[in-house]
Image 1 (tube, one colour):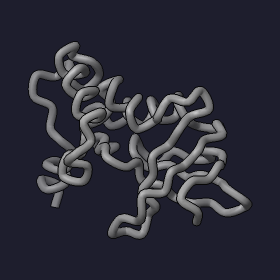
Image 2 (cartoon, rainbow, N blue to C red):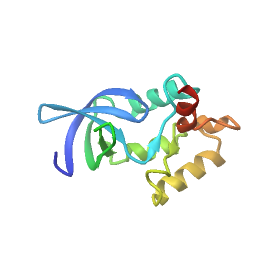
Image 3 (cartoon, rainbow, N blue to C red):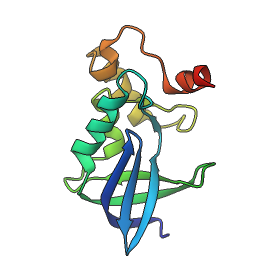
Amino acid sequence: TSPTFLGEVVGVHDGDSITVLARGIKEKIRLMGIDCPETDQPFGEAATLATTRLALHQTVTVTNRGRDRYHRLLGEIVLSDQRILNHELVREGACWWYHVYAPHNTTLQALETDARTLKRGLWADPAPTPPWEWRKQKK
């Protein structure tokens, strides 16, 4: 897979995982630098709906940032209107900036700070549980 490629978003698994069809091949992509609430977690369904509304059936540009430990492609997704899906989800309060995996991403950091300040999305909750903590509690 090339560093950057065009494809159509044909599936949304949850807020931070999509499937893109490119050159006849379906590729599961984990959105880089963000972590959305799990589906069974508060705001999880809202995060999935946000990703669906923004990206499903759109032709997008995927920037390949390598693979995660589950062999999913880590990607930054540029929507047809040139907005970056990863950024839009943080801006809307649909997810956390995943600072463990994107510690130097000052754009995501600033977008999360704004969403928190404005109490957008999951930040309307005074103490939302980060998905990495939710996953630990579920084990």
